[in-house]
Length: 351
Image (cartoon, rainbow, N blue to C red; front, side):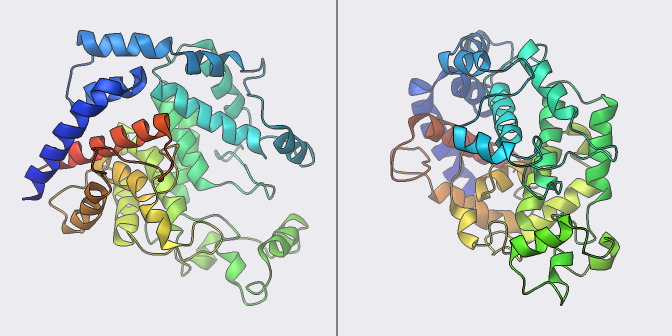
């Protein structure tokens, strides 16, 4: 039976991972897979060690006074040539570093976190979203979803700015349950534009040479799988939204399309993205989608979940771990392994 197979794999892999994992991985392993209480001495010890971990200390020490982090020279040149943050790699690096900071058990009241979150929120549009991070400055719902989740994780859930961001995401959900990238994943398909290169179309948008945009005019265009997956990732971190109709519809959208190619050519169109194990673990992949689906309430009672779960179980190597590729990535692979174990453990617990 699948449950017994999962439980055996989880027990074996968790035991091996515990013996060699870095402190933050060990913390999540103990608390979310081995079901240790957060007050358990072993969990508390792992948290304390995580907060002193050299990699984390170096990352926080590099933060600038404005809340941002340095980026590579070429990325800086590209960013400076554009309109500036939130366009560019600065925004992307901030999202990544905040996500890592939470994974490494940084406290919500840490001044580095407060500085970075306030910087991101300073870019918020009056309608609630944050533009960028790409040159067209069109807001990406998947980035906004991840930022929403990070804000909640660090205690900003009741902040009016966080609520405004959540409301924008919910307002932009489409009839099929998913989300897309405005303009370039709907207006882009108008007969007069569909044969243009993407950069040519973006130039028209930036020059104001496209018609006034009304999302209601494009509801027949399917939503984007990976944009929706990013929003789901954020909503799955928000307990108030777990049982919401909007979150469930978003989960239904991606679950119905698991292993399928994306309709849109400009964002992870290949179906291979489902079976790639990516790091950071919020990047679009089957593992990320399963993680969100589990937290949104999907489990063994939904027969659509069995095939993806069997795929994830089948990605486990003979040594009991999950890997980004055939080339070793020691730390990344620990995070992928604990994430896979969490998904399988929670799925099994729902039987």
